[in-house]
Image (cartoon, rainbow, N blue to C red; front, side, top):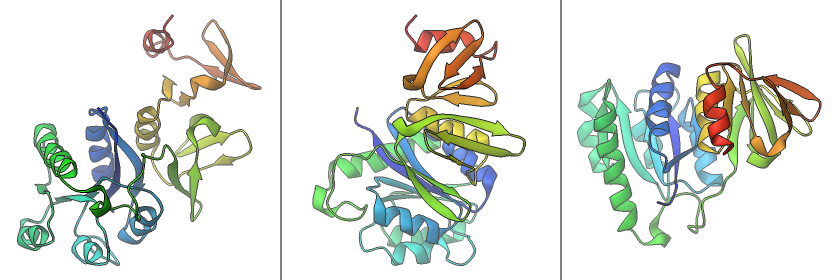
Length: 238
């Protein structure tokens, strides 16, 4: 099944993590960005093709309903909100579904299925995501230090939890994303990365050597957690 690019927009970290976790259960969903506000999401939608937008309504600066009105070509919209009273406005904007928090995984899957069905019946030229509909881009958009970085997965060596922060280490530099390590882990594993420790996610293409419970990537030594080792070995096909 083809992959569908998704963007999550919610000002509440816990709500973002829940949607990210649900997306992680569906292998055909690829979360390309997790945004805390509508203006951040607008920049992403203008730069990368997006199939499904999971959107909160009650957000500061620009609410979800107003945000959708600013888009010339919107992706399939699934509203995720705690406010029932906005449902009529949402469907007037052709939202594919309206999920009331807290919503279950099965209800989430029903909404996603509706979105995919609509994508399949929509001409490519009418789909959102910044113009011509093209093959999904593997790039990841990561917000860090007031900037949005476009990262190519193969350039990422590994990611690390560092206290209350996360770090992404590439061949040339290190960035500290404005997201929890849980959200970062879910995003990277969607792109083929492997979690080998509660504090480390690696890009297996950069493994130089595995010795005992240690992985060597370039000049970095990364531990393999005991609870992750069996799955790690399985994913390597050993």
